[in-house]
Length: 128
Image 1 (tube, rainbow, N blue to C red):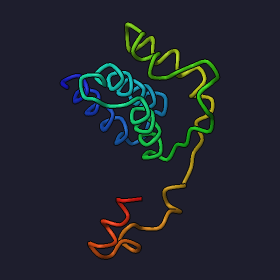
Image 2 (cartoon, rainbow, N blue to C red; image 1 turned 30 degrees about the vertical axis):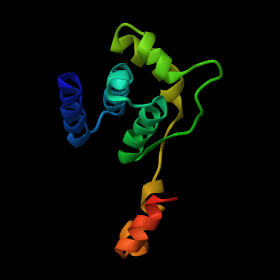
Image 3 (cartoon, rainbow, N blue to C red; image 1 turned 90 degrees about the vertical axis):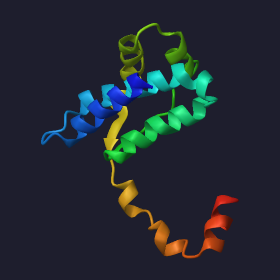
């Protein structure tokens, strides 16, 4: 937990820098993902949640990953079986960094508050 708190603090600080360094932020996102995969068995998390979290962190800074995971590669197992986070970052960044693409996809989505206006609609939306 302390490791993830530390990485998260560094990630937030790196994003807030006047000139955001995309490689530095990307490395921190992959580092956070590495620790998620290693703590996953303890938290009863899943690999899918870890990968969705990785993609969501990139989207939150306006970057879309325009590629699927390469054949015969599993991001979670890379994280679990790699002894150091830096080795994980090196492995994943080789195929992920070249396909990072600026996006405004989040800006084009409708606001939740415009479509889910009642408690009933909140409950119904959670059941889909």
